[in-house]
Length: 255
Image (cartoon, rainbow, N blue to C red; front, side, top):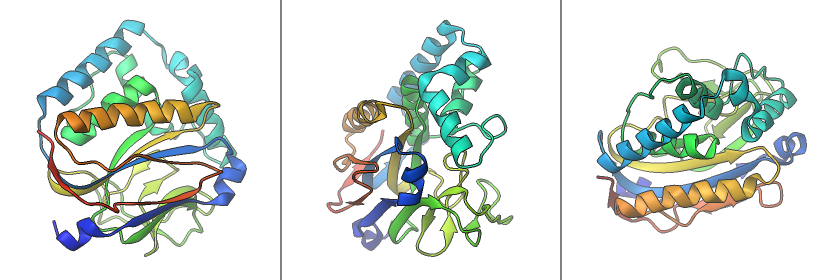
């Protein structure tokens, strides 16, 4: 990875129009400026397996998953911004549903698997984003309909988000998510190799900040175990809608 890219700061901002509609929205962030993402990490695999086993033991139905306080709040938030959560469940509901019915999640790589493990434990949307191609700024905002979104796994079939849809958007008119956190875009997918990573944890329920901070703590502990040099966590909400990340780059490797 280009050392200049690793050293760039990134300002992340939540649009006031979004928090006006969903005032309880909280976004937790951890920046990892330079990390070697590997295919298999035994500690992460064990962590994800344990999270799956715990959920299997609870024997939750699809309705039970939808009724979990963290998920029910996301369903309400989606409706508030005009998205049908039955058709487009949030990222956390998708993985919880899949595991609750007895399945295992596919193993992707060390960071994606870590995010899935923490998502199952916390019942919150957790994601790993490669921001090596994103310059200066990232906004969580309502789309105006002119943005370009490259679907995960299908970058040659660009889409345009609907006006008013919540997206993660950069300063170049690119959207890196659809319907808030329902789908991640291809540009920010985490692949193996040296990467500039932004890890995200989101909540929409009352008291969500505490849960976001606990999830960030779990991620930070795991990164420390792997010797990864992550930055200090940043938590954004309606009262603190913007912050800067990647101010102190360091090299690390997840093994």
